[in-house]
Length: 526
Image (cartoon, rainbow, N blue to C red; front, side, top):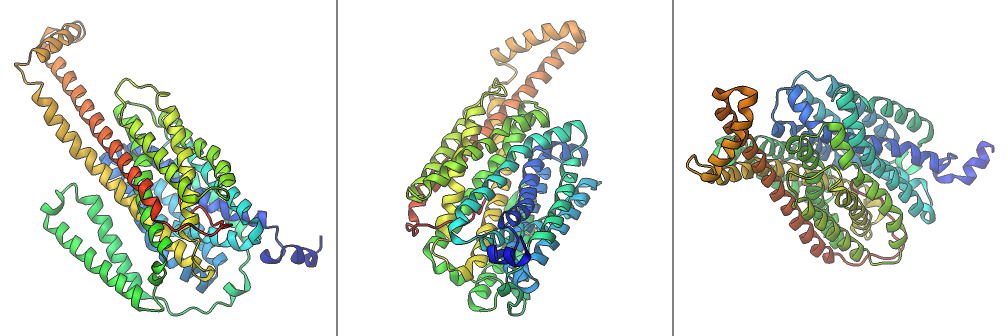
């Protein structure tokens, strides 16, 4: 086929087969999703290696999400100002380079700084990839393209936990970040070769960058990050600096909203929120971000910290979530054009709520296959959430506002995820202390049950440690079991609250107006 024939056959991609474009832009998103899934499994090992607590290790996730969220609203401006291809390449290079420094980090401070840079590079990967993909296919073929894109993205959560666990156990948690390097290099090569900007991007005229709006965005998201990460350590509003940080957050947020609303050349166009479906979708994606990132972050921790699983085994256990999504994606592709998306979305949230409630009914005797079906069904239910939620959110948004809308949409997902992780971590700590106090009240020295059980354990330990150490050893073992049980009850509380959040979202689904038929936007969450 000559170049002229190729141009005539594929005018939208300047002669490049659009499926090659799809493969090229799928790689950066695959890399970002893979990184999130891998990092969640490696958290206990990162904490141990860098002399940090588990709550401090979760900053590795939250720092990335908040930094990611800062760039999302600005991605549309950068893409139009410098060209989507050039900006996408720059983001992939920043993300890949930062991945190396994450893996090589000698301290917690260094890895957090590297994660902030990595989040800045990864922030625009998904909206840019979605925009390029949408523009590369004619409307009649966009549904198939989005299905392939979505299927490619959900493979990452299948590979992520298992691959991350294997790398962490066999080599080091550092390889969980190094794995991004070959994927990033391949993405750079393919994007350079196959992706081209359309004429209206190459010749786009954009206004000056909104420095004030961007600065305000950095201030309020930065304050949010610090408060979420450090608030628990200093008893939240019991610390003066937390109050000042929250005040700065509130002032900067209000000023940012005012600036974005009143300035036509602002960083984002908040007038798009006049659209009812976009308003509802942004609220829903924030709630979904909270729910899904809670499960992503604390379920592997539960298996490793409470049940003593290795990273690889924990990865194998939680990996079926992605398999469930793979199973559900083609089904939602078939049903999406035939069933009211609100029904599908409500069913997805209800299914997620049932699974979260099932996680909240476990005990210390469960095995690796006990939660296989709920974990598998979680991924299946989420496939009924991602696509319908994106469909209804931007179904009534004009094409020229698509970049602005997807940037806001993904920003709220990340902010919700960061808030969810921090709230879950805080509640696990606080509820563990509460349950420990309650259990301790039933294990006082005069307790007949305590005396009986400690005597049985001491009799056994006497053969191993000697009579002098048997009784202290028995009390130590009972105390350790009590701590484990208190932590178990705290995880159960968080899982059940997540189920309530999902039930609330299932009801809130009906705030959407029914979208027009034949709408096929990208799956805007993962």
